[in-house]
Length: 280
Image 1 (cartoon, rainbow, N blue to C red):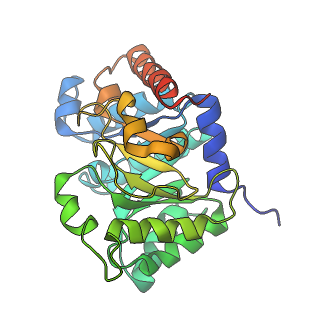
Image 2: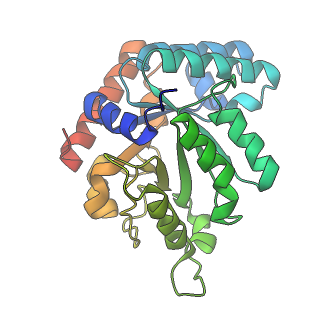
């Protein structure tokens, strides 16, 4: 049986060919209204289909935020399932933004939901929270490795409240975020061209004040509505900036529902990122 190509290799290729950009699919109620849609399942489906059809054949990563689909119950999840399948069929890598974190068999069930090829929500990668201990992520890490998928682990998030946990000091003097980053580096050791365990590090931090050399991708939320710009990336990520995947949602989605507007916004941001990080 042929081993699946690792996520890190697939992501590196997608970033190099399509541009280093992740676009979120975040159907906020206010955004549906701005698009002239009702805040119901019909509006959700129309919004999601428009984004997938406009962008899935050209951006490296699409990142649906699971919560905005879950709020509509089973019918919302059905929309999400279809979007994931159609986006992957069009060539985009799908990163499910679910931020799951638990222990034992429960973490295993989350892993089966997003990282097992037979699941209706099978995605290329998923976001997870390590703050029940990095070892609690083992079921997701193992499932991802077996399926050629990726895991993005929260490290230094863009919300100011995160610092009270992430900047706390471990017994050996490292910040808890650095402890997690060091675990990620160990998971990625020897991988080429890029490991499959990524970190979530906010682009709004100014200076990450952490060693980000994890040999894996760095998902960087905060571009656009939260105030960061592509020009800020080198200052935050330093020598690791070439592995950054900036994530933008409203900065692209506000240009809908016109497909050309969505495509133009995504292409423009990808070009800005390339220029800022001198990639491609």
